[in-house]
Image (cartoon, rainbow, N blue to C red; front, top):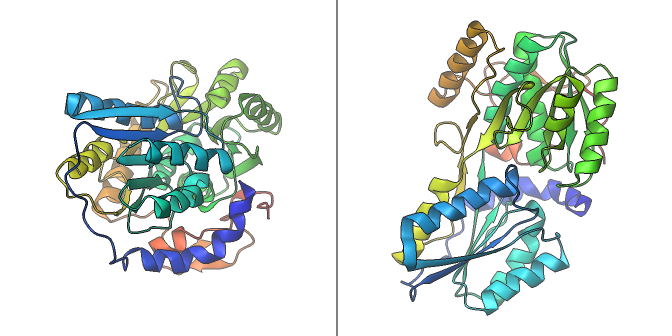
Length: 364
């Protein structure tokens, strides 16, 4: 996955090109049932990134019945294995294929070029093609809100963050969480351990234990398993779930979770395909669009903190507040956003630095 680190310098240019893709042509009405493939990077399980996407797949089946036929392959490694699975879907007559990991981007584009009649949707990427759309959620908005809760509940002012790979999506979440914490506690710190895996419960648990030993009394993660929440429950420290509400694994210690919601997106894309109106879009929805949100707050969270979180949530949705509004300084003190300004989407998509409050060096 670190192979994709070298693409960061290209993201700004790519982001500018996303809206200028004019060669795409709307799809034709397909033969029924519409065959839809889903390529998953980790096991489905009952919580996490892949689980949330699979809820979207199930919502499609419920909404469209015998007009669609879905199939998925889980635990697909990024790289050659992903290309094989994506090609198998296209070659076997699947008219619409969803590929849900950053490392699936180039394999998706390669296969799409060979199957120009097949519709592809890629999650978290930044490159499009005439038959490849992209989609993601503004995870950083929910992360910011979770950071507020974390800072209000922490006694040490230190949060531990278990992270997968140093790509903009993950870095953005770390920085947004830190911004949320420091908006209510300017001295708050976030310590990060990179595990270089999307799904590795053993490594995730080990990292969580290390962070707890370093004084973190709030643990969160950008990885696919429930290991961090489970470890926090075992150690008696607060946790913040990610992707899903993981409170079943942290009934006492999970404070909330930044949750993703894909059901509406998948239903809309399948409806477009069924009507012959599909085009490769660039979707990036947040709190306002209902693509991210917070899980119910732990009863231990005081009412005044819940009220503050709701106030900030409404401000973000109304455009009065941005998690990355100025003045904003990078780690070390260099200003990256002037007072009164905000980071635009192009800058967010190439984020490759820590903000003030994050401890340690960003991997190269």
